[in-house]
Length: 360
Image (cartoon, rainbow, N blue to C red; front, side):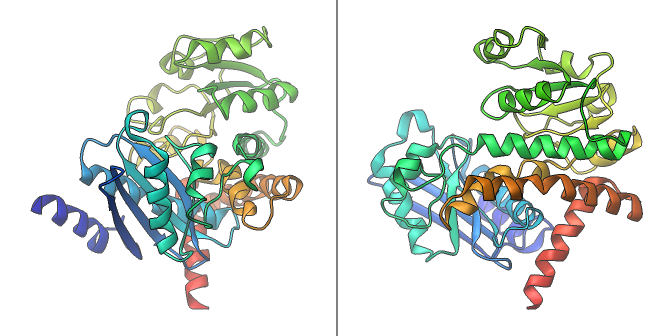
């Protein structure tokens, strides 16, 4: 156990991935709750980020994930123009086995004990109904159902924002924001991906899809027989004539294995943490592949849950999400000016906004 603690403390206090303001370990033995709440920064305002419910192999892995995700939320919220810092929570365990109202209520009490420094929402393993339960103990809860004063599913605006990022990528690379006649490959056509496909088809794109769930594929191909489905992501990224690749499933889609065989000129998708490790962004740039940073283009969801705190207005949110187009173009311009990959440019812009907020 000593080694685990030393590893976590070293990451928190000494590594480049650390610098978090606060990490809270939460336990409620009666309900089985074990959770980690990580607050990376409150420079721009209360930390905002979802609650992940996942059966981590070790507690160290859970803490490391919370630290990494919280840091990512600081950057995402800064680039989305939100007055929020970054935070994230993870609940350790299999949600299909241990999730209960008692556990979620206990978790809500821990979030409430932070007095508004951290605002929670949905993430992997948690849903709108869960946030309704958490909200019974904690007013700093977003992602609730409309029946409970929330905005409901954020997939619509997430997909809309990714589409805006894709349009900006087309504008930068080809001088025209339209995807008409472009071949776009979407990996993962679940909650967000299938809505993105609708935007692409409406814009006149040729769409190729893949998903591990056959029913997700059928939902699209039965409605749009013009959409082509391929066996898996390995086949998708090698598709001849692919213009844009949209990873919309799991993280780590851009790796040492996938980047060398990727046929697309643009990568722009909804998945989080698409770069498997630092350095992949340079590999993309070296191959002449334009990468729209994931945490910039997929920010529509966090824009929605942040708005919920002020009385949700869909039109107001959509207007803010449409600015992802301009933000993405600004990142490409900064990358070109500084001679760095777009991912590094996005980080610099986010870090600058956070640093300026700390000075005031």
